Length: 196
Figure 1 (spheres, helix red, strand yellow):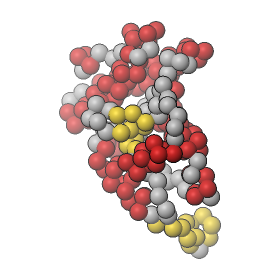
Figure 2 (cartoon, rainbow, N blue to C red; figure 1 turned 135 degrees about the vertical axis):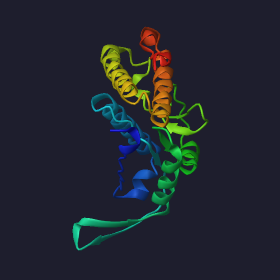
Figure 3 (cartoon, rainbow, N blue to C red; figure 1 turned 60 degrees about the horizontal axis):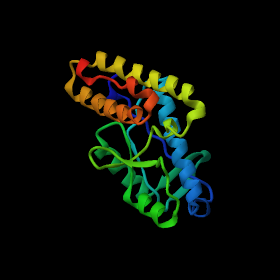
C-alpha cells in the first residue's frame, strides 16, 4: 500500500464541548492521546498519519437513530483544508488552536506537544513520549523506536523507485532522526538516508 493510499479520517466530538475544551489541561491531554495513538500505529502497523487539528463550534443532529449523526462545523472544514495542505505525514495544529492554548496556558514545557517542523509548519509532536526525561522507560522507548525505524526502512525499500512516495518517507526519516538525535543513548539509531 502506498502512503498516499492510506488515508484515515476520524472526527472527535466531545459532549460538554464548551465546558471541557475551555480547560487547557483537557486539550493538552487530548493532544497527548492523539500523539500517542499516531506513534503507536506507526510502531505496530507502520502507518503514518497526515491530518490537522483545530477547535471551534459545531452543530450536530441525530438522523433516524443515534448511530447516524450529522455534524456541521466550520472548524471541521478548516481541518480538512489544513490536512490537504499537509503533504507529508504529520498532524498540523491550526493557528486558532495554538493561539487559544498560548492565551490560556502559562505552563512552559521542556518537551512541547506542539512543534515546528523544518518547513516552519506547526505540528503535533509525535515523539513526545520519547523524551530524554523519560529515563525509567528508556528500554521500552528504544524498542518502540526500533520498530518505527524498521517500518520506515521497509517501506522505503518497497517504494524506492517512486519519488513522490520516497519524498514523504524522507520527511519521516528526518523527523525520526531529529527525535533519536536528542537522546544521547539513542543517537546510533538514526536512519542513514544515503542508503535509499
